[in-house]
Image (cartoon, rainbow, N blue to C red; front, side, top):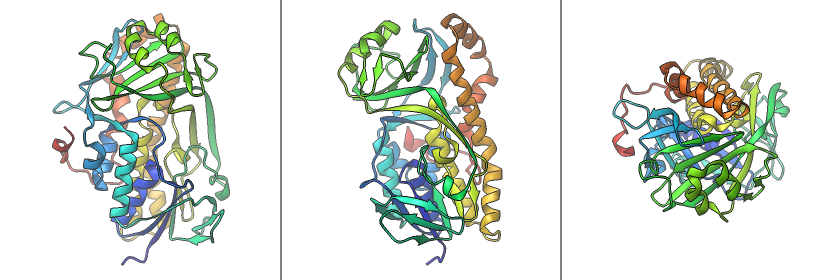
Length: 391
């Protein structure tokens, strides 16, 4: 049995992936989650190539994507339904983009972690971490490990305990998310299988099929938009903004909001200090305009496990190499997603014309797909070994 020990703080997507990846590389891993049970928070989730690769690496791909929706395209559209950006997906040589229920993904990650030998400790709130690898808890004795991975989310309480400088921007936009039954009243048959994002004024409406029976909706708007208030969405007001989606919004009337999130951007001055490393939203939170929060967290977790498991370098050297290799791609994704908030600020006519022009250029689409190609710190196969399993 390996003598290397790791403590992971946070039972979300990034923490579970890191724990499973480390355990599969021979580490003894304990994961601490402050809630009484590890559970999904959210509705649906997009899994692009990078996330699918990370899931494959830790043995969770098949369970996470069983029954996943395989769309032919991802489209941005004007209020009138006219597409100004189309990304064809799930073709023979194109990018993959599957959508699943978030709780299915989390369950698959929990199962993969336990199968790898991770010890899961729930109801365990970490209060501080130290560069020497010590973790302090609210109701338990401190724990010392060779490596500590902090993945406790955008509201991380542990960043300050290791004296890391960071930038945190709370944005004026956010999203109300919900799951609804697949509506009989729209959209049109050809569109019902696509991932669609509609724009009007400062509102965006995201339509995402996840299963044959369930659709994930996200209502993105300013935090003070009167048509979204806590657990309530005024579907009538949104139908007036997006009349072509009235049938879908009628099906959403009265459905409780899963959650409201105000978007945030977080950038740490560095991702590690001593034996402590940060990843996921605790280190590189981004608004969800590219659907890459989960994907970059999982990919970065796999890269971290690979870097610290290579023979030879000391742990600080391995963590420095991990950040050097991984950070540029992750931050490029962050910047692209953060810039996309600007689309909320321009009039429809300007946005539609601008996006119609730039959406035809391969360079613009490539910028949006750059994150899906990230495989830092790993040795990916030259083909997609599990493509058949996800079709």
